[in-house]
Image (cartoon, rainbow, N blue to C red; front, top):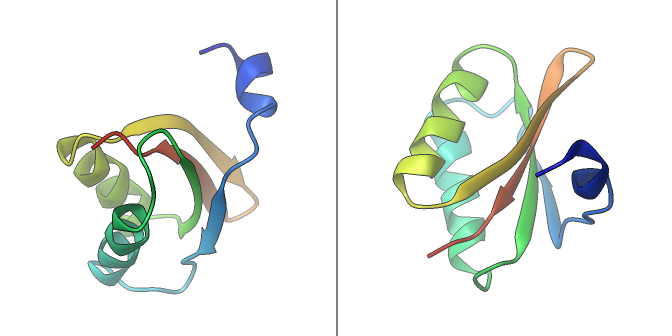
Length: 84
């Protein structure tokens, strides 16, 4: 997807998991995605380090799409499309 198109996507839900330890940040993201419909988008705020290194690959393994990953100050913002 082009960056211009992604900037127009308004997430259906936003969760802030900064300060949440691994693997709880993945578990909380997965629980939220389980409540959502296919095609809906979830924005997750994650800390640098282990969180951003492990959560996106785990979500890909679950069949979801990572639409964007952006560093903002000292954390990351990822946009996920629920796909299963």
